[in-house]
Length: 432
Image 1 (tube, rainbow, N blue to C red):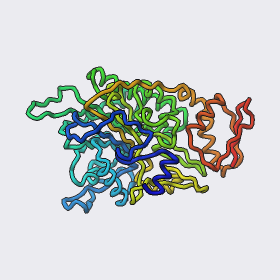
Image 2: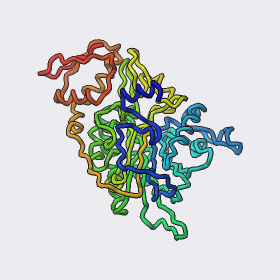
Image 3: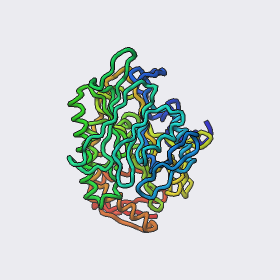
Image 4: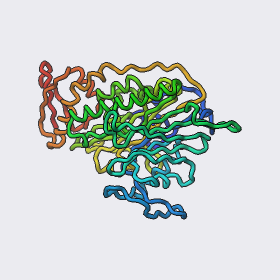
């Protein structure tokens, strides 16, 4: 391991590649592993999700590498840069996901370029928003499964989810036996890409939207479990909200289990971060992406981690701020723009051959209370960064102890000094 890899391990205990390089904090719940082809026989069934940030390419022609124009997005979006496409292809070939769920794909042919060896079944006919963005599924053909795409009607029932809640039913095919889609699926994977804050006209409306989106997701889960009592269900993708602090998502976390909760401590915000926000000297790292498992599937959980992009030498790509501090995620929008996407891939590995008793982790009490001060802090900190880091004060409406918890779960810029100017009244001062 090179110096950068050693430094990364010491600072963050992070690892983000294949299972052999998995995060040391990611607990492998099963001791042994073996290579298998059939889905039901796999001890290392791997699901990866990624918001690919407006992934659009032209349709490959018969010569493979040359691209020809097939369809354009409805808005003015340029094709993904060739070097970023090549990097994503390498990640797929190195990680070898059995199921790949991508958000922000544009067009019905863009994923073809990611599969030069034609190893995957592409399920792409899913609802798109006004920009042509939709969620797609790639399922490895060698699994010998039937992958059925289902697009439920959720727009009129709960909330206008522009990209829908498409899901796939995976059923194992058995040699020499008749196959029928009337049989219960072996696995159901729901792909999500929910509404972003910037498109929701303020906090009050955003909170209402998140509540309705959560209800829609849970309603779909309940319907599927009613139809298939033994169903193993997974919700994967970009929720466009911090799953560790948004109160609207606590109901989802109480009924399904975040895979990272079993492998990375909830307060280790840096290791769990899948996206970053930047305002001046402030970098806010948040877990916007998640893999939620129902209890039936939780028993098969082996490990889960955030994949970190790598340099050409295979070392994890690290970033420095103005003070020389090292982070595993970008410290500015310019640095973030150099990556494949503004999000990081999320990986979950399952052992489909055996189960174990895994106790559901209750939503921690401080997570329930955290939103009392989240609005006070989050928006004000961003204003602080945008106002050249001048002296700034806020009055907290929540408990000071919860504010301290917020500090524990947020990686703030080292430029910032936070002082309690009046602990009795909860006035907090930010100083450059």
